[in-house]
Length: 526
Picture 1 (cartoon, rainbow, N blue to C red):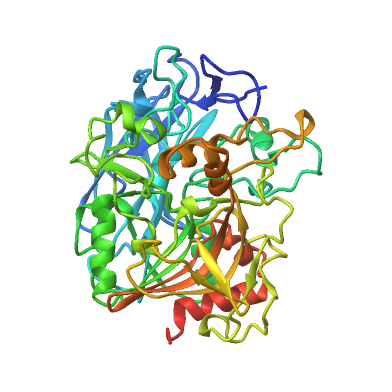
Picture 2 (cartoon, rainbow, N blue to C red):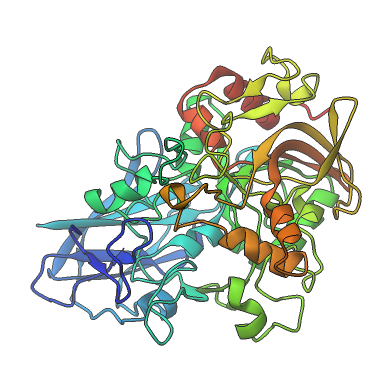
């Protein structure tokens, strides 16, 4: 049973996994409710923070806090609010709610992620914004995966996965707006919320505990897939516990500003950075080629997107791009980066790609695998101090390998993996560890067939990347891997610990995972 402000979509089948339910404001002006969003994803000190809100009450309590192990409250004030209608297509075109506050951000507020908590009797909700520094204050810059946050945010009913568009009001949305609240679970998690990796008993239908949990607890079904709370927040809190200082910026800032990474020798990405624009890649590659070092503890580098000039609308036509995208005849086609029409392989930037396997640790996709990276080059500097040897597995206890990963086609020579020829690399790749991953949720029959993932992803990759739906192409698309690798590009480098769930090892305080993380963030890259 749905609770709070969650409702069923027109095509909802009632299933927690395949169904379509979502959080949205009530049209009833007497129902206690309060909602908020910032007009931009990020600001700098001295700029004007603009907040939009609506409520059933004439006044709400607003608390602005810099998030962390112990959140730092910067402002608590009453906020004048009024009721405003929420358009049916708010997730596509924005809510259009009135301004509730304009605030010049003080110069002494530190770079970070700031939560916006609004409360009235009977309801409370949260938003956030990112504060960039005026100039580098820390040695490491965390690049927040806001493209993926926007793709998964289902507040109002539509995202890049399900939606209220199309003739049946049941299609995913190729366009999504930032001008709406963040779905519940994107800013903060309940303490008992499960992460995604799960191995269902063999020969049974796969279960998804995180999606079973979501409707029972009144939280977005996509809470564990993306958002500040899922990956970056626990990673940042681990850094704080280790006295590792971070500055913060967003992918949207990287898209707009070619100099967004300047002044930093090292940039950190954590979690799930599935969606990128052409401009984001251009600006990252230029920084790498000039000597930058990217520490990427993230997985699923996969889709090209476009952003509107004001950065408030993200576009990705995904599997419908060839037929529906107005840019279908250009390299800005919003499909897989490895699509032949785009002609810009993912490996050129990151050294690895999401289309080399992607799924691990859930459904029937390597769900009963090791859960970690099998080590092939234990002498590599990233493993110094771990004690791990050839054939050992890094991170199995905490299941760091999943739920989506990046890999590359490779060959084995004398027991060592090497990147295959013609994989799109623009520099040397050293594979330190790897494990199998797959786009195919295998089944032995109806008793363990998965309606959620199934064979659809393998078939689509076979069709669009490999030339057709033949058994050979589907098999090729379904056999893959995820790698931990060092990629040298220009004068710079990427250390790609290419798994969404790497942060699970930090949450669990698994010592070897912590040691590798310190080596990559703080050590010399030999």
